[in-house]
Image (cartoon, rainbow, N blue to C red; front, side, top):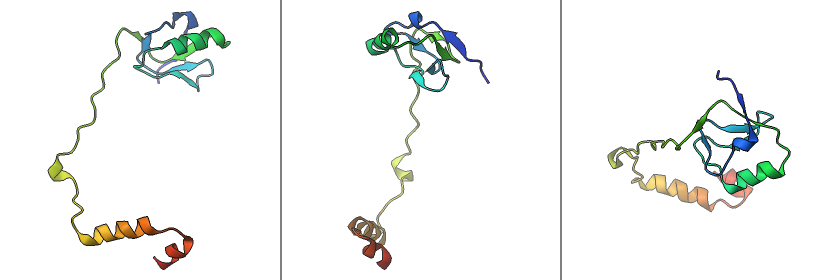
Length: 105
C-alpha cells in the first residue's frame, strides 16, 4: 500500500494535476480526482476553508494521463433481441403500474 504524503495547500494552483486522488486532511473526503486539473473553484475553496494540508498517494504531474476507453464489442457479438417473446416480456414489465399487476406475473 502506498503511503499518503502531505501537500501544502499553497501548492495548488489553477491547472495543478496529480497522479492519484487528493484528499482533505481527514484522508477520506476527496478534494481532487486523479488526472483532473485544479480549477479556480478549487483554489478559492482552499483560500476560504480552514484546510491545513491535503493528502495524496500520488505526485504532481505536468499533464493528465489519457486513459484509453474500454474496447467496445463488435456488433456481431452484441446479443440480438429478435424473438417476439423477449420483446413482449419487456412490454409487460413496462406496463406494470400497481402491486396488483405484480401479483399476476
